[in-house]
Length: 413
Ligand code: ADP
Image 1 (tube, rainbow, N blue to C red):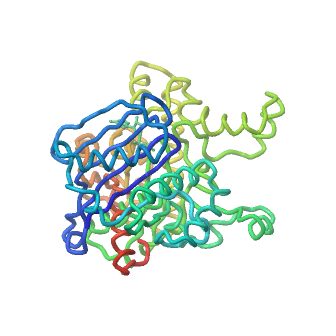
Image 2 (cartoon, protein in one colour):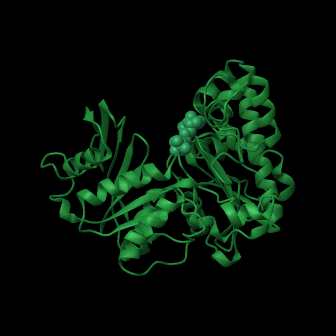
Image 3 (cartoon, rainbow, N blue to C red):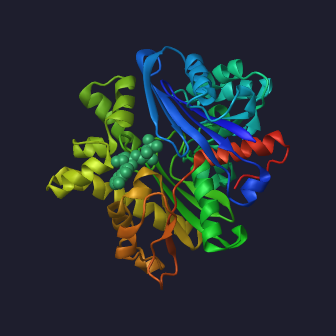
């Protein structure tokens, strides 16, 4: 089955056309036939980058003012006689949509019936920066491909297995019952994917495996996975909590916010912008939110770039050790995401000092890890394995869409 996977943001649509089936999943052979993105939607210089598998990428700049036009452009490109990978749109049998927030309602992925779409709309209040844009992509795609099933795959649903003591804040309980104030967690499809891949790599059944997955990108979160189920994760009510991120502060004493608002005379909006856009690696270093740039600056002796990387790695280490304690042990720590997959410096610094719990990485293996490959970077005698596994959230979305369409959705994980 060919599934079009769509990840719609405020001014962008990322997509993959994925060939999948139960037979292909069994052989681990389902794959993207083409992928791409339309960025800067809403301008006369939107950029459509298209990569058909095994062929050169093509970039086109044109006026694209709405998501609907972007998706029409994507379908046109996928079916174009010269550059296309399918003959007609009818070959697309289903569409899978990334949805950020499913609240407590969605513990699994779901087919987009009118009722489900309404329930996703109800979750917009919890994720005003994400869900409305995800839904805009859904409505546009539904208009263009009205006759095929559409499915929603949520970033939050994998974490719905967290126990109450992990997801509740120490606030008046009534805030939870009245307003749903609790920790939800995000990046669920990524944690789920690398958790599943690592069990395969380790050759262990899910019932006997305790994992800590570190998704480190511009946004970053860590997840404790026991028996294939998320039991804790570092992001909370919103993706602001937890690790230091590209521009987000992560864990913070909430009293700081009131103090700074008063001292700097900030509005609520300005304070939120400071925490979400001007903090993190960028805010600490004053150089960049980009780890590649920070590593370069550190190598040239930039002190605050070094400090930003140190804070980043220190928090990763703290969460890894905390989650090992939460699960009463751990079998493997997994690194994924742009930074986790590519930065040997971050992996080495984050894992340094965790030898006491049986984790030690081999410096040569860590340095030699090849981009895009799954690799074990532990020393041979390490009791806790350290793995690098490239994430593939789109594959999970395509597989869940297939299972929903065929009526065979498995429990998450
Ligand atoms: P997003 O959360 O936006 O999906 P990504 O997962 O693509 O982010 O990760 C982007 C981050 O990965 C950036 O900070 C980037 O600098 C970092 N990164 C990518 N390649 C490397 C590399 N070779 N070395 C260090 N950091 C890298």
